[in-house]
Length: 227
Ligand code: HEM
Image (cartoon, rainbow, N blue to C red; front, side):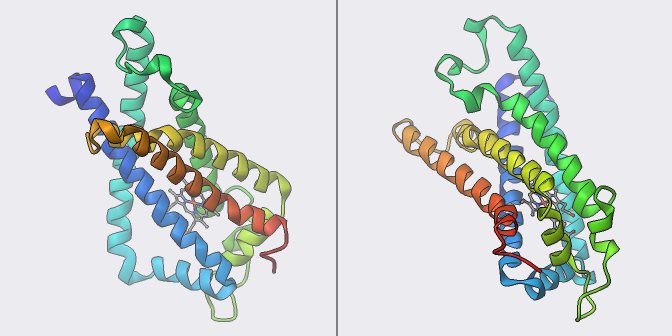
């Protein structure tokens, strides 16, 4: 617990939980790419991850993710409050003055991502928003699987839903633009000499991640993915 009362300990835990959340996003993005294989691919993928065989690892991953998300939010809020109270010269984030938009807005972009996540889970996991175009509103596909492809296509054919997701992906990009670099730096992975390289690599990864997610609504809006 002494670990948590020191700012470096908090930042280390923020970094570790941030990396776990980022790795989840990479895995999620890889799963999403099955939508480009068409209805059969994504429906088969979704059926597999919800099958009895995958239930234990899926639930274990969900517990770890939820713990990481909770810690990341709690510590991020604490660090933000401490940093706001501290005089600029005593600030935890010593690089603040040279910080860019991404690092200065981490707390706010984090809050926006949390709001998006709640909306996203209500949409695709709990089917309680946009219920008329959720998986549970459609008959199964020809192979008897829940028709996730239809739900995704019909969702992003609505410009308001597609636009909301695209805005959210811009925020995810802004948050991870600094987050990936900051996490690796906090964990002391690079030597001092390679900091600029690490920073650029973090920015490239963040952009690729967000662009990968954004490709799905864009593909539906442009008719590349259709029913
Ligand atoms: C265009 C971008 C995205 C699309 C199309 C998408 C699609 C989906 C779909 C279809 C599901 C439900 C899968 C199922 O239960 O069969 C899902 C679950 C989920 N998504 Fe996304 N997603 C996107 C971006 C994101 C982002 C950026 C985040 C995080 C900030 C995120 C976090 C989650 C989480 C936490 C779940 C629940 C996973 C679980 O059930 O254990 N998604 N997503």
